[in-house]
Length: 378
Image (tube, rainbow, N blue to C red):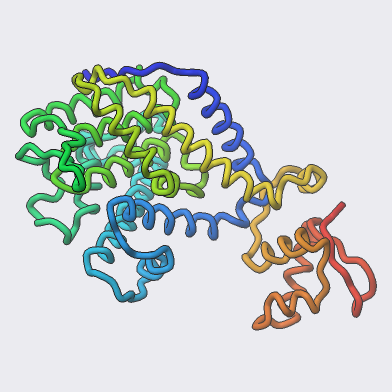
């Protein structure tokens, strides 16, 4: 069975400690549900945009958003199809997570579907080749011949630097792929491997599947999706508010450079030292969660507000969020300010939004009706 080689360094421990701190703040922030719809949609668009851009897709962020919303854009057909495909991958991961939470059989599980699964699914999600193959099918749909989708490669491949002609990476021979994949998933599902921190397991999943390079095309996107699935099924989805793809794209040189540095070790997969890659991966998650934490704290870090809310989470509309953001930025708000902020919304609707914030003891009204001024609770 595959046994990854790595060392838990002080840097990795530091990243994980900060990840845990950010995760706790995000999960406990009293106003987080107010942002969930907006943040989740942004996270999906970014994941799709940056995951495909890493592979050379030319669509802009705005164009990707339009494609996801079902609108037409003027672009190459392959670029549009790649975006549609990766959005379908994200939906598939959500479907798997839902089945997992509902104790329904997962792809690859040899269980009578009429029987309810009784295991504790918090620790026994079974990752499988069937899931991985299905992810690949979705990644490459209508891009490569259908008979190759979800099928392991039958020939040797090599990644070559197009400028220098240098071979950057030569993955294992095709004949080894089925065995290496089988060994890898045996490790991923092993009880001992489950003792590792989920972020480290996710990092290893990412590298291991990229290194095996089991498909003719679509290996990077498929591996990143599996790494995401590990986080999702082990309580590190963080409400679906983040993705690592943006960090990888913005730091593409470090991303590919670290992967290549590990791969250049002239050793079998099980003997390659993954420490540097795991550190890079943990750093990426630390930074991305830190960014989300700062967004959350923008509205929920006020200790007195948190105490007044009793730590409870309060669902708000997007308009109510914008009203709070305006009040926080400018120190207060008058009805005239709100009319400028929402020119297409009636004054009665604005008043109802403010009344809800007042009732929730988030906002307080000062002054007379005509000259009323709204501020955050103090």
